[in-house]
Amino acid sequence: MKIVDIKNLHVSFQHHDGIVKAVRGVSLELFAGESLGIVGESGSGKSVTFLAFMQLLKKPFATIKADKLILQNTDLLSVDKRTLSNIRGNVVSMIFQDPMASFDPLFTIGHQIVETIQIHNPIRKKAALAKAHDLLVRVEITNPDQVLKQYPHQLSGGMLQRAMIAMALSCEPQILIADEPTTALDVTVQAQILQLITDIQTETGMSMIIITHDLGVIAETVDRVVVMYGGRIMEIADTVTMFESPLHPYTKALIESIPGRVAGKQKLPEIKGASPNALAPPSGCPFHPRCSQADAKCVSDMPELQTFENKRAVACWQVK
Ligand SMILES: Nc1ncnc2c1ncn2[C@@H]1O[C@H](COP(=O)(O)OP(=O)(O)OP(=O)(O)O)[C@@H](O)[C@H]1O
Ligand SMILES: [Mg+2]
Image (cartoon, rainbow, N blue to C red):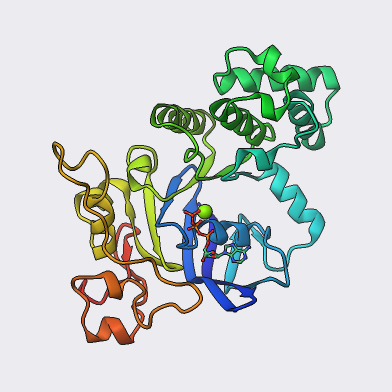
């Protein structure tokens, strides 16, 4: 069953020096129980896609257009405020790039988790506190009693990430959107946090979207991958297919740049050239200036995302 259906989403921002076209015609779907990875370089429009979906971008600075923005049976393009806040609390939880942004520095972790639980669940404070305690145990915080009494700044980066996940899970969402949940952390903690999120997903059957700029990070975590570049989707495939037979030259370059794929002390291959300027994106395919296979058509015309069997899709003139 489809629970998220985004069709032809465009998002632009009014800057003082022009209009930034952050997302340019993105269409994607999320199925119940599925975990989906969104991958792409910094600035490719990953966060903006889901901030726009959740109606979290401030108008009039952001202009959002779409043919469809559907969550379960609700059309988010025309939803009223009350339904929206209900959805944000009870159906979808979002983990943001900066864990500090999820917490108020003036209140203890315990107070904030208890408050979130009570907003969505009319239970007494004592019961909510017990639930908060259980959640901290679940995200493998070993001293939950102490952490409940602490303020956000008293926790290390890794602990704060865990507390944030506990808070995101406190309303038992059907969908968890985790935006770059691990960038601020060292590699071991990153792996632990991702494992934790995956375990919880398996346990609860919730659907999940993980946003990251690192394809390697999600290689073993998600069922399906969406590759973004310059505000467009370049390729969609299930994870195994994406790694075994990538079609888009950008996906191929991303896979080649994953650390560990290069043996010995060789320098890591980097994708040559700069990311597209969102104020003045290149004509045609946004990747053409950096693509070794690009020809005249790639320079002049933007390739549409072509869908094949097995939910596989690619936007490239060179893939026939
Ligand atoms: N609030 C905003 N106002 C203006 N421009 C914005 C805003 N948020 C994002 N942008 C621009 O939109 C484009 C896409 O940004 P987005 O944050 O979605 O990238 P991203 O793929 O999430 O990158 P990262 O991996 O660095 O998080 C960028 O050019 C960015 O500068
Ligand atoms: Mg982002």
